[in-house]
Length: 211
Picture 1: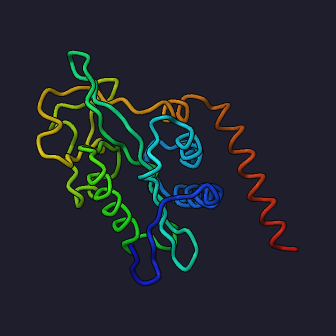
Picture 2: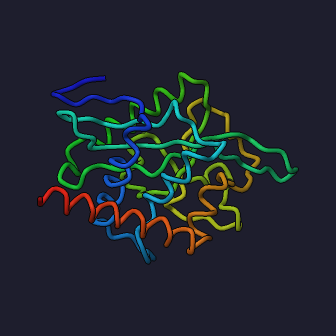
């Protein structure tokens, strides 16, 4: 998909460092309630090694050979009251170069990836995000399907989108993401180790550029 020197393609291994820097820059500038630190670049790193990660839905946006956007998907599940699991997707992190915010890059990336996810046979997506933004893609509160977070709580930013109408049903359930999300939020020592190496690489790169 190409438009005005913008191309959407699958992320390659050679992109990993550039994508992680993009993610860090994109989220560092955001004001999110309850945020204590920027760890979305660590989540991206973890996701690539998780068995529920979906490489076919790991897209980057390139503009004039620079990566300016990224979206990643992984498998998640709705655990029903009877213990059965309904497979779904979760996307995130979703990142756009700060200078290009509000210029349609994120919208193009999300629409492209949702279409591709449907073509691959996936039937629903669950996310947490800004309700006013994600309604434009058809997301509604997950509570409309009786779905809550794993702790039984629900809130407006927890949203769902059926790619196949009727798939999520009305039986409800609790949302369970892949292990990478748990490690990202629950292992501060692993985050510190990764982030220290990450910032060292950034500083080394900046020093090389100044020489």
